Amino acid sequence: MLGFLTRRILIAIPTILLISVFVFGMQKLLPGDPVLAMAGEERDPATLNFLREKYHLNEPIPVQYGLWVGNAIQGDLGISLRTRQPVLELIGEKLPVTIQLAIMALIVALAIGIPAGVLSAYKKGTWVDWIANITALSGLSIPNFWLGIMLILLVSVRLGWLPASGYVPLSEDPIRSLETMIMPAFVLGTGLAATLMRHTRSAMLGVLKSDYVRTARAKGLAENVVLTRHALRNALVPIVTITTLLFGELLGGAVLTEQIFTIPGFGKLVVDAVFNRDYAVVQGIVLCTGVGFIAMNILADAAYRILNPRMRDA
Image (cartoon, rainbow, N blue to C red; front, side, top):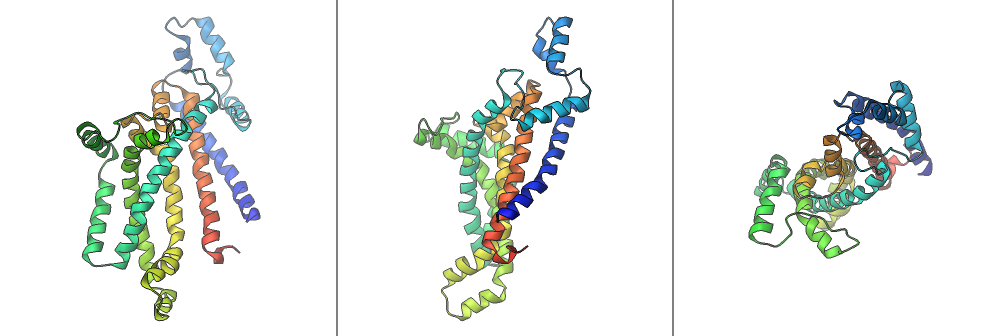
């Protein structure tokens, strides 16, 4: 396993370099001059030259890229032009918030999507299958921002059960923190549950037709044992793939939900950075998100080898 992980990490290094080139290149195409934003309203030419020299903006683009990558390797992603904080420090503050939201949303998705997919495949062609598919299609079709607003109006404004917005750190007040995260996690989790349900159903339909499932039934094993220990376990490989990708998507794509519920996570940070032309923050967030996706894929490959012994020699 150690050798496999080492090979996968070595393969991931060129991918990370390509991501860094893309991130840096796209930032240069964005309109506006960050130096003008830093210089204030007066925009004294001497100040502008000083700032461009300080941040190496007078250097050729390849030199700027080399300096940025060299600093990034050492853990220095630059300084926020708006708050003057190190970008890595900002990411360290916001990332735990988004990770908490992503984990809770994934729990909601797994709790709904996998049982619904297994039941839909087992009851294929029945009214249960029909209802599960209609529900999954609805979950994919309903926009997150609309569902979030409706939940705020119903659960918070009319019923007063949960806070409408805001965030309390888990370390300060766990109960209050979970209360503020339940609705946004449900909003994100329902859409993911629909995707998981469709993939689980497809994987289970293929596995339920296999010879080892028929053999297990012929031995007289209970149906729940056949479904969980024999069918579902072998159907988990594609489900693990989609789950890891969905988790990576949550880390970088919960922008609208975080804006609606005023959650100070990755999504809100990147929106504020784009509006303020805080390019160092945008670069750092996108780079960290790309590295996160690669890490999720490596974990998925490792999980394959654990779940399917036949892949351990591959």
